[in-house]
Length: 142
Image 1 (spheres, rainbow, N blue to C red):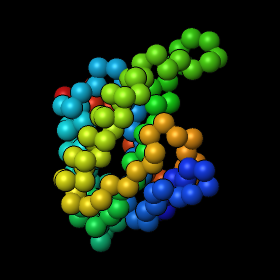
Image 2: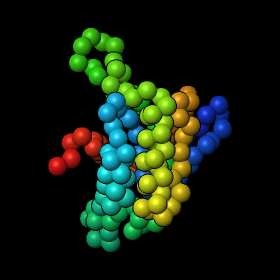
Image 3: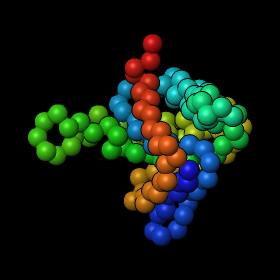
């Protein structure tokens, strides 16, 4: 797996084996959501063990993490043909929660979480191994 993010032709984040995370912040999201999400991501067993079973976390494989802010994840496509981003949090509080999530994840995994640039026109590149793509929504926890 490889992932990178560039702004204006310059790479600002790049990883090899690990997780690329797209982070969308919606109105009403809180630091409690950030904490829950960071814990969930750090401990999720999605990497293969010696027997080929998804049984290891990013911490257990010594993986890297690239987290990219992505407000378009909040898109509603229920009406018409143009996505609505009305659920997206305003930029300043969204950036604060994004940075909070990255900091919490960094502390839990004891690794630097590499990032894109919030609000920038980013070019994201990913070679997905598997592929394994998982959606985690803090509002759907039980």
